[in-house]
Image (cartoon, rainbow, N blue to C red; front, side, top):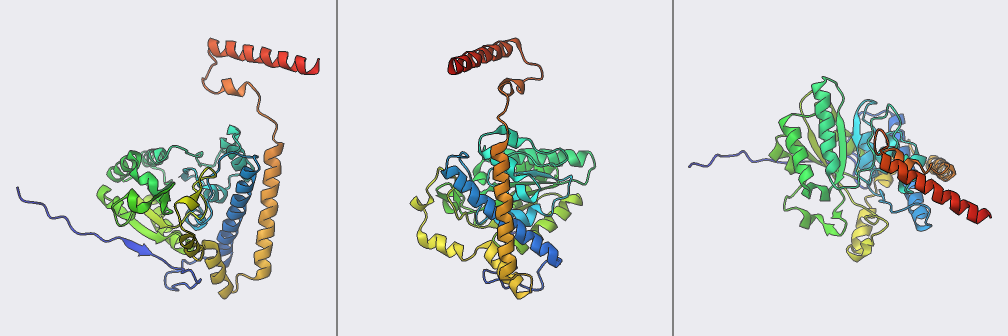
Length: 364
């Protein structure tokens, strides 16, 4: 049987803003000064939030947390392009995307503190909750995109995940459905070089993650994930393509997780100090500052004000999170079924009686 010849392929790599803040003027997106400042301010706010979350976890005031430091450009540069009715499906490291999407910071803190009310997304904001299972939410994103297409809506879905998620079957199933049905979905892979302690070189034999899209019949592009302009440009084109009914895109943001995988991890056991320092010089916020300073959009005074304002907002969010009244005991039982079955009613009554007896003993 003769072999069928398949055309060779190439994967594009996009960088606009290098680590020294120098940009290719021909590629810089057409953004107003206030739009560039908005992205910068969101990135700084996200980092301040991240630093505070780490401090709260170390103090025992929230639980395990997945830091986002180093990946702010990946999230702000893409989420900022979503329209009100578009859908966003995060994994567990998308604090910057949540903030960009307008989710109140005190509710994000609530979630990480173990209060599920933090997952109660505001009505009218099509943002899904944190997804702890690796990769499963990508199928949800494709499903939402397929539904939008069936309804002839112009909404699109965007989903975030890490390099490790591309080894999950869910990723391949999601890509296959998206490709076959030309679903209006944008896959954003934050390739931060490690799936916990496993380097990407042991995660896949592919030279890029972006090329995985080709097998499923749609485009993939690799961008400098620490370059907010490159992320913005790639995401804008992918969203416009999806909204026009031309199918999905996989964007691989080549970036780095500056912190530990979560607060339960110790990245120093599998990463060298030299590697971390090399990536620190590629910091997405610093390089944008350099660009803005050259264009007269950033000054030391402005930078200090943005930082101070961000700290005030985050501290206020912490106060709000910690001042929220405790949930009612009935909440444990009340949201599993549409109508509470008899056995749960019985258990709830027993629990209330135990609490009443305990309270009497403590005050008696």
